[in-house]
Length: 371
Image (cartoon, rainbow, N blue to C red; front, side, top):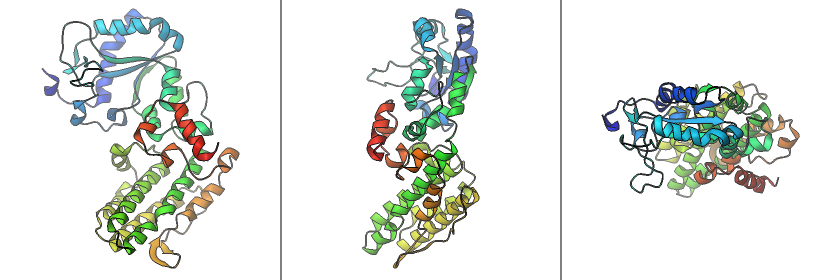
């Protein structure tokens, strides 16, 4: 059976089967007592639980991450890779474990059907400290992140490290790292909420101003930006890391607040004129503002939209929510920072946010904050 005929399985389930039925027996027999963790984390739609049969056309399939200490990886890494290449089955549940080489010009990330010879598998052995540092710029298996670590870690990276599944963790280091990164400390969370409200305050009046000068396209574009910021704010309020744009709507749809917010957010995007666009945005502002008040983080703020100074535009004046949140931050390092937030509150370049160069993110963050 070719993989095109195999029944689709969620990628995490396929990874679990690969580990339990193929990889674990080989490791137990060849390396008894070797401490390691086995998981499927990091990039990939299956890690977030959003993969479908469409995902199987590239960079998807029976995949697994093995995590060892640096000395154990140096001592056994090559032998593990050779063992799996020689002994892994050619397929799991009808899905080939054999992938095209990364430099194959035909399809650098696709499956190859079962062939004679070694399996070009996607079971990757990592030094746990090195992998965490490449993903987030920080080794959370060794210590708690500091303020600068949190602000330099993109939410997509955090979602990938804390999502997915861990099938085995002998040393416990991966589990410790995932626990440390599960969500922001309260002080960082308050600061990021303040920064997100501040972002909204900066553009909410532009929807009306663009329309006033006849720029309906510009008004719609700003409305779209505000909808995106409101979605990310709702995720923050419900303690969920926001994935990148492809899966933002899917993650948002899982929130408790999604059902009540979706009509107004969709309405703002579908509106063909300013009055309707403003009406839907104001409904969304109010709903998210009420959620903020219900969090109990600060004293409630009136969630009613109001005119923008003397202009005929209704806005929330979202800075009214940013100010008390910022004032509630007591951490000295956070209190002294401008309300620019974390790296993905002031940058949306995929190449930057998904790069494996933690120091580059820190340098960019320092350039923005002056620290």
